[in-house]
Length: 122
Image (cartoon, rainbow, N blue to C red):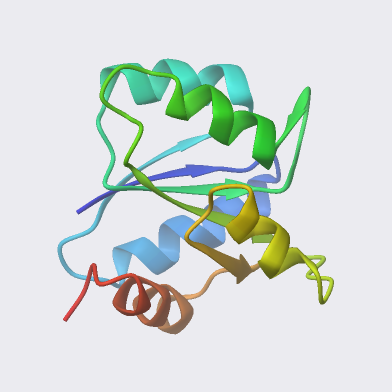
């Protein structure tokens, strides 16, 4: 399984990388802004995009629209990730095309649970 994680906060990225390292069968790449994320997505097909809500230059919803516009990427699963989970955010995420909304920081147990809920882990 391939995960593309997009977050401009280096600490959250390091925590996500550590979580991925603890889940067998996960290969990951990280980007710190929308531009590099789109470039990476063109070159490396991910099973799942995990996208921060607040990014420099575009929010997670805008980045998802850009990624979905890439050839062959319309059906890639996506998760919105945020440290500021308002009660309305999960519903907004679903309406915006995300399959789920995860709280940050993501740890190994949360990653496993989230991947299982998406049907990506047994």
